[in-house]
Length: 344
Image (cartoon, rainbow, N blue to C red; front, side):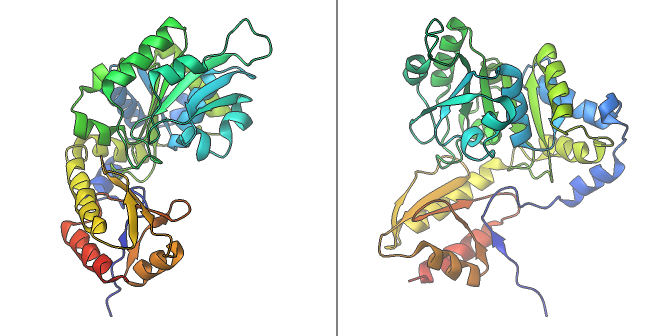
């Protein structure tokens, strides 16, 4: 008896490597990356840095690791990081800013995970006031996970960059899903990259790689980051096997992200017609977050979907998240819409 296929909307991290990606991994040339001798890792790092107009890159195991390494390089103990209160670097990285870098945070309440230039300006502490921590970093997230895949206006990013330059503050990008933003905005990668001192990009969210993220920056920044990666236990040896998957992802899976966005829009349209859905964050990329009517039990809806082979994530009180990705087909989106219509 054939096992029923699961339609998994929990995250775009649940994808499996395609046959082409598996073959690239199988064929990869490898060496010891801690010695800087893995040719496939080196090629991936050079490729990613060039895409964004950066001098260098560092291959790491996860986006949490790249973000935390960047913060550790930019910030001294006792310093302060400005970020949105729902940002991944604060909310989903295990308290890493405090634990790894002994730094505090200035949390801002912006629009769908995005902060404004004025908020940044108003949150920079007076360096002459000894009662306050020194503001040492601004971090933004594009697209915003908790904001339902919301995309930053590029003009806003440039204004934040201008403030950071004037105040001599580094600007970090948590770009776990930045390629989803590019799919909508069409901003040239290098023009975008020029706005940041460091960038984290993820290869296993949306792009289909089984593991891995990259940290981008100047040669000096990456030299320091490599030392921090070692201290954090992130040194990898024959990592070319997984780096090859990242190269394949960058070469083959960027141009298809529009399909995921289209699928999220189809789900949004169906969900808007259901009386047990109170509100949906307007879909901008591949993430859909909905709020349920007060009379509906969130866990009961999730359970009913699971019984029909559809997996979604609880995302807060009365909130559910769908994330579309390359392992979900158009027919499976249609099947999900039919299942949603039948839930009472």
